[in-house]
Length: 222
Image (cartoon, rainbow, N blue to C red; front, top):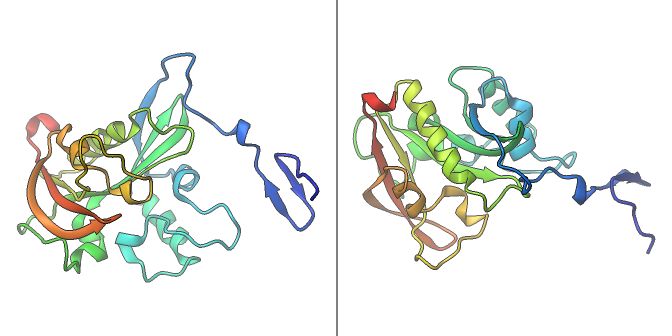
Protein backbone atom coordinates (compact mmCIF):
# COMPACT_ATOMS: atom_id res chain seq x y z
CA UNK A 1 0.00 0.00 0.00
CA UNK A 2 1.33 3.41 -0.97
CA UNK A 3 1.95 5.64 2.04
CA UNK A 4 0.08 8.94 1.90
CA UNK A 5 2.16 11.97 2.90
CA UNK A 6 0.54 13.86 5.70
CA UNK A 7 -1.26 17.05 4.80
CA UNK A 8 -1.64 16.20 1.11
CA UNK A 9 -4.50 15.62 -1.32
CA UNK A 10 -4.08 12.33 -3.13
CA UNK A 11 -5.86 10.65 -5.99
CA UNK A 12 -9.62 10.50 -5.52
CA UNK A 13 -9.60 13.55 -3.26
CA UNK A 14 -8.65 11.72 -0.06
CA UNK A 15 -7.08 14.04 2.49
CA UNK A 16 -4.53 12.85 5.00
CA UNK A 17 -4.32 15.50 7.73
CA UNK A 18 -1.03 16.48 9.27
CA UNK A 19 -1.70 15.53 12.87
CA UNK A 20 1.40 17.35 14.10
CA UNK A 21 0.17 20.65 12.65
CA UNK A 22 -3.14 20.62 14.52
CA UNK A 23 -3.42 23.35 17.16
CA UNK A 24 -2.82 22.17 20.70
CA UNK A 25 -2.89 23.51 24.22
CA UNK A 26 0.52 25.13 24.82
CA UNK A 27 2.83 23.53 27.35
CA UNK A 28 5.64 26.11 27.23
CA UNK A 29 3.69 29.05 28.68
CA UNK A 30 0.50 30.00 30.50
CA UNK A 31 -1.98 30.74 27.69
CA UNK A 32 -4.52 33.52 27.47
CA UNK A 33 -7.96 31.88 27.78
CA UNK A 34 -11.26 33.64 27.15
CA UNK A 35 -14.88 32.78 26.41
CA UNK A 36 -16.85 34.64 23.77
CA UNK A 37 -20.46 34.38 22.55
CA UNK A 38 -20.89 32.44 19.31
CA UNK A 39 -22.69 35.46 17.84
CA UNK A 40 -21.18 36.18 14.39
CA UNK A 41 -18.69 33.35 14.93
CA UNK A 42 -20.16 30.56 12.82
CA UNK A 43 -16.78 29.68 11.26
CA UNK A 44 -15.28 29.13 14.71
CA UNK A 45 -18.32 27.12 15.78
CA UNK A 46 -17.82 24.97 12.68
CA UNK A 47 -14.17 24.40 13.56
CA UNK A 48 -15.22 22.81 16.85
CA UNK A 49 -18.56 21.14 16.06
CA UNK A 50 -18.92 21.03 12.29
CA UNK A 51 -18.45 18.10 9.95
CA UNK A 52 -15.34 18.50 7.80
CA UNK A 53 -15.90 15.61 5.41
CA UNK A 54 -17.90 16.72 2.35
CA UNK A 55 -21.32 15.10 2.45
CA UNK A 56 -20.68 13.68 5.90
CA UNK A 57 -23.37 13.49 8.55
CA UNK A 58 -23.15 14.85 12.05
CA UNK A 59 -25.02 16.45 14.92
CA UNK A 60 -24.00 20.11 14.42
CA UNK A 61 -25.39 20.55 17.97
CA UNK A 62 -28.89 19.99 16.60
CA UNK A 63 -29.79 16.91 18.66
CA UNK A 64 -31.69 18.99 21.21
CA UNK A 65 -32.72 21.82 18.92
CA UNK A 66 -34.40 19.92 16.09
CA UNK A 67 -33.04 16.50 15.14
CA UNK A 68 -35.57 16.25 12.32
CA UNK A 69 -33.44 18.46 10.09
CA UNK A 70 -31.34 16.80 7.40
CA UNK A 71 -27.54 16.84 7.38
CA UNK A 72 -27.62 19.56 4.72
CA UNK A 73 -30.05 21.73 6.71
CA UNK A 74 -28.27 21.59 10.06
CA UNK A 75 -25.32 23.91 9.32
CA UNK A 76 -27.71 26.39 7.68
CA UNK A 77 -29.84 26.43 10.83
CA UNK A 78 -26.84 26.98 13.08
CA UNK A 79 -25.42 29.68 10.81
CA UNK A 80 -28.70 31.56 11.22
CA UNK A 81 -28.57 31.04 14.99
CA UNK A 82 -25.06 32.51 15.07
CA UNK A 83 -26.29 35.63 13.29
CA UNK A 84 -28.97 36.62 15.77
CA UNK A 85 -28.93 37.61 19.43
CA UNK A 86 -28.13 36.05 21.79
CA UNK A 87 -26.45 33.35 19.71
CA UNK A 88 -26.64 29.60 20.37
CA UNK A 89 -23.83 29.32 22.90
CA UNK A 90 -20.27 30.26 23.77
CA UNK A 91 -16.80 29.42 22.48
CA UNK A 92 -13.54 29.09 24.40
CA UNK A 93 -10.31 30.44 22.93
CA UNK A 94 -6.76 29.56 23.92
CA UNK A 95 -4.24 32.16 22.73
CA UNK A 96 -6.80 33.20 20.13
CA UNK A 97 -7.37 29.67 18.80
CA UNK A 98 -10.90 28.35 19.15
CA UNK A 99 -10.76 25.34 21.44
CA UNK A 100 -14.22 24.51 22.80
CA UNK A 101 -17.96 24.99 22.65
CA UNK A 102 -20.90 25.04 25.07
CA UNK A 103 -24.49 25.18 23.89
CA UNK A 104 -26.36 27.51 26.26
CA UNK A 105 -29.81 28.88 25.41
CA UNK A 106 -33.34 29.15 26.84
CA UNK A 107 -35.04 25.80 27.31
CA UNK A 108 -37.83 26.88 24.94
CA UNK A 109 -35.32 26.92 22.06
CA UNK A 110 -34.63 23.19 22.44
CA UNK A 111 -37.45 21.23 20.83
CA UNK A 112 -36.25 17.95 22.34
CA UNK A 113 -36.41 19.35 25.89
CA UNK A 114 -39.86 20.83 25.39
CA UNK A 115 -41.12 17.38 24.39
CA UNK A 116 -38.97 15.32 26.76
CA UNK A 117 -40.48 12.45 28.71
CA UNK A 118 -37.30 11.86 30.68
CA UNK A 119 -36.24 15.36 31.80
CA UNK A 120 -39.08 17.13 33.62
CA UNK A 121 -39.85 20.85 33.63
CA UNK A 122 -39.54 22.04 37.22
CA UNK A 123 -41.43 25.32 37.05
CA UNK A 124 -42.88 27.89 34.65
CA UNK A 125 -39.63 29.81 34.22
CA UNK A 126 -37.82 29.46 30.90
CA UNK A 127 -34.53 28.30 32.36
CA UNK A 128 -31.39 28.65 30.27
CA UNK A 129 -29.83 25.24 29.70
CA UNK A 130 -26.25 24.15 29.06
CA UNK A 131 -26.85 20.93 27.14
CA UNK A 132 -23.59 20.23 25.35
CA UNK A 133 -19.83 20.64 25.76
CA UNK A 134 -17.23 19.99 23.07
CA UNK A 135 -13.49 20.47 23.50
CA UNK A 136 -11.25 19.99 20.49
CA UNK A 137 -8.68 17.22 20.44
CA UNK A 138 -5.38 18.71 21.50
CA UNK A 139 -7.03 20.96 24.09
CA UNK A 140 -8.60 18.32 26.33
CA UNK A 141 -7.61 17.60 29.95
CA UNK A 142 -6.79 21.24 30.65
CA UNK A 143 -9.98 22.28 32.44
CA UNK A 144 -11.69 23.95 29.51
CA UNK A 145 -15.10 22.52 30.42
CA UNK A 146 -14.88 24.54 33.63
CA UNK A 147 -14.02 27.64 31.63
CA UNK A 148 -16.89 26.98 29.22
CA UNK A 149 -19.47 26.43 31.96
CA UNK A 150 -18.53 29.59 33.83
CA UNK A 151 -18.55 31.53 30.54
CA UNK A 152 -21.96 30.07 29.69
CA UNK A 153 -23.33 31.22 33.05
CA UNK A 154 -22.00 34.73 32.46
CA UNK A 155 -23.47 34.78 28.95
CA UNK A 156 -26.90 33.70 30.17
CA UNK A 157 -26.83 36.21 33.03
CA UNK A 158 -25.94 39.01 30.61
CA UNK A 159 -29.07 38.19 28.62
CA UNK A 160 -31.47 38.23 31.54
CA UNK A 161 -31.49 34.62 32.73
CA UNK A 162 -32.55 34.10 36.33
CA UNK A 163 -31.98 30.36 36.50
CA UNK A 164 -29.68 27.97 34.60
CA UNK A 165 -29.94 24.22 34.29
CA UNK A 166 -27.77 21.37 33.08
CA UNK A 167 -28.46 17.64 32.80
CA UNK A 168 -25.11 15.97 33.49
CA UNK A 169 -24.22 12.39 34.28
CA UNK A 170 -23.47 11.03 37.74
CA UNK A 171 -20.04 9.39 38.03
CA UNK A 172 -17.99 8.06 40.91
CA UNK A 173 -15.05 10.08 42.21
CA UNK A 174 -12.58 7.70 40.57
CA UNK A 175 -14.64 7.08 37.43
CA UNK A 176 -13.86 8.55 34.02
CA UNK A 177 -16.39 9.41 31.36
CA UNK A 178 -15.73 9.07 27.65
CA UNK A 179 -16.03 11.96 25.22
CA UNK A 180 -19.24 10.66 23.64
CA UNK A 181 -21.36 10.12 26.76
CA UNK A 182 -19.65 12.95 28.67
CA UNK A 183 -20.75 15.71 26.30
CA UNK A 184 -23.45 16.64 28.84
CA UNK A 185 -20.89 17.23 31.60
CA UNK A 186 -20.76 15.64 35.04
CA UNK A 187 -22.61 16.38 38.28
CA UNK A 188 -19.26 17.16 39.90
CA UNK A 189 -18.45 19.75 37.22
CA UNK A 190 -21.74 21.57 37.77
CA UNK A 191 -21.45 21.40 41.55
CA UNK A 192 -18.06 23.08 41.37
CA UNK A 193 -19.73 26.03 39.66
CA UNK A 194 -22.51 26.68 42.12
CA UNK A 195 -25.16 24.31 40.77
CA UNK A 196 -27.24 22.09 43.04
CA UNK A 197 -29.15 18.88 42.44
CA UNK A 198 -32.75 19.90 41.77
CA UNK A 199 -34.32 16.61 40.64
CA UNK A 200 -33.54 13.17 39.32
CA UNK A 201 -34.36 12.30 35.73
CA UNK A 202 -35.01 9.07 33.91
CA UNK A 203 -32.58 10.15 31.19
CA UNK A 204 -29.22 8.46 30.65
CA UNK A 205 -26.01 9.11 28.73
CA UNK A 206 -23.64 6.24 28.18
CA UNK A 207 -25.75 4.18 30.57
CA UNK A 208 -25.22 6.67 33.39
CA UNK A 209 -27.99 8.43 35.31
CA UNK A 210 -28.52 12.14 34.65
CA UNK A 211 -29.59 14.83 37.13
CA UNK A 212 -31.22 18.21 36.76
CA UNK A 213 -28.66 20.64 38.14
CA UNK A 214 -29.77 24.21 38.85
CA UNK A 215 -28.13 27.52 39.64
CA UNK A 216 -30.26 30.47 40.69
CA UNK A 217 -28.68 33.71 39.50
CA UNK A 218 -28.45 36.84 41.60
CA UNK A 219 -27.69 40.48 40.88
CA UNK A 220 -24.01 39.69 41.46
CA UNK A 221 -24.03 37.31 38.47
CA UNK A 222 -25.29 39.94 36.00
